[in-house]
Image (cartoon, rainbow, N blue to C red; front, side, top):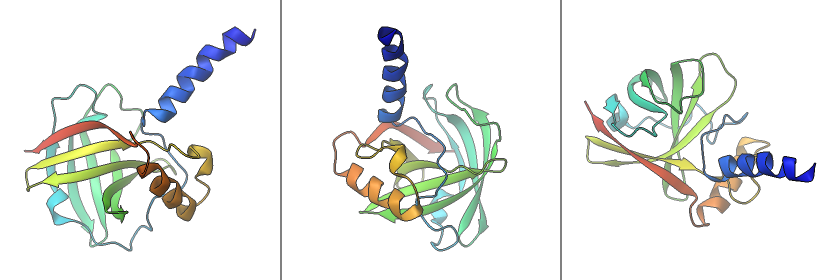
Amino acid sequence: MKKHLAFPCLILMLLVLTGCPTGLPHPLGNPGTEKIDQNLIGEWITDNPDAEAANFKIAKKDNYSYSVEVLQKGEMYSITSTSLTGWITKLDGQNFFYLKPSDEESYYLYAYKLNGKTELITYDVSLLVGGVDAVTSTSAFRDEVSKSLKQPNCLSGEKVFKKK
């Protein structure tokens, strides 16, 4: 019986450790407090088959948030809505983009960097110290991400998007 439980537990642990985006009940930042980065606005596309969204459009919602519309889902896209609200925050020198689908109370997180104005690189964020159980508030989430950033392989799954 124990052998039968070991495999599913191993799969679950690998999903958590590989940074596959999981909805969390708390955002990494405080929505509505950090100004948007105008360079993120536009339509982005990738040919990476592992991308959750192969094509999406980011528009300014207001000075502190974005409207995000997924135009083409990837194979790994796991939420039902294609309309999301997004915000950015910075932690330990790293830029993060967090999103909330219109039909959920969960938040999804990606690290990102821009190369000029036409290339967006995103990364999955692995919670390597306390895992998702450590995310009990925004403050606890920030602490977990900060500690995880000090570990190798916290940022993984690099995906490169080009501005259309």
